[in-house]
Picture (cartoon, rainbow, N blue to C red):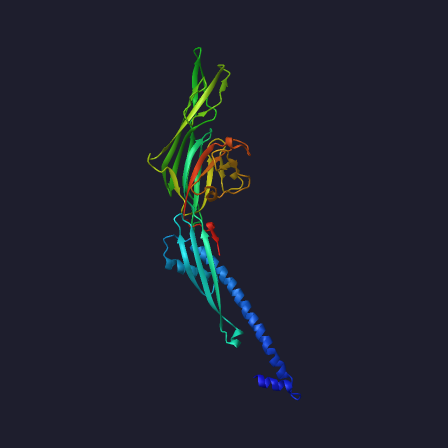
Length: 375
C-alpha cells in the first residue's frame, strides 16, 4: 500500500483524485475513533446512572433476601434503567446496628463502528457503585407526660406502609377532661371553687386494622385546700393560689398523675413502624373549639412543639412540614407537645396542653431516604 501510494505521489501525469482519497484515510480514521470514544463515554455515563439506581433499589429489600435473589434484583433494576451489560453484587452487608453497606459493578463489551478498521470490534466499559444505608426508626414508644385542659382531644399516629397509598391508624392517645371542684366551709358557710387548669384521664391504644388495644393509661387526681401544700409528692402539679372573693380565702390545688401499663408487665405504647414509609401525627380537639392539627399540614403544624430535652420546647415554625422519622432520633428521646387551639400562636411552650415523649429504636429499615451513595 505504501509503495503504491508513493508511486501516486511521484506521478505528474495521473489524476490527483486517488491521492486525495488516500489522504482522507487517516482523517476519517481519527474522526471514526472519536465517534466510538464519544459513544463509549455516553454508554459509561448511562451505565453509571443505571447501576447507582439499581444499587439503591436493592437496599430496600428485606434483610432476609438471599444473595441470588438480590443479585437478580440488581440486574433487573439495572436493565430497567437502560443499563447495558452484566452486573455483579460484589458485597452486601447488614451490621449489627442495621447499617447497610453494598458494593456493585457492571461491565459491557460495547461494539465499535469505526474502530473495526483497526480490528477493534469491542471496547470494554466498566462502572462501580457503593452505598451506605443508615439504620432507621423501626419502633416508637410513646409515654404521656401531662395532658390538661377543658377540651377533650385525641392524638393519633398515622402511618403509610411501603407501596401503600392510604394511611392507617397505628396509635391513639385519647384525653377526657374530668372537672374537679373543691368544697369547703368558712364559719359554717359552704363555698366551692373549680380547679382552673383542668385534668383528666388519658388512654393510649395500639391500633391494628379495626382492633384497638389499650396499652397505657394516665389518671390525674386533684385535691384542694385553703392552705398551700408544703410537702407535695414527686411530680405533683401545684397551681398558684386562687383567691375566692366570696369567702375571702385563697384556694390551692394539687394534681398528681399516675401512668400505668396495660398489662402492668407490658411494653406500654410501643408502636412498630418498621413497615411504614411515612408517618404523621394528628391532634383532634373533639369538644369546645373543635379543630384538627397535623404535623404534615403546613397550615396547622405550628401547634406542635419539639425538643431534645423536656424543657424548653420549640414551637414548629409556621408553614413547616414535620417528618416524624427525622425528629425521633435513634436510641434517644424526642420531647413533644401540642397546643389545642385555646391559645393564639405563636406562644411559649408552657401553653401546650398535650405533653408527651417518644423513644426511638432503630435497626435495618427499608425506607430508601436513608441511603446515600459512597462511590
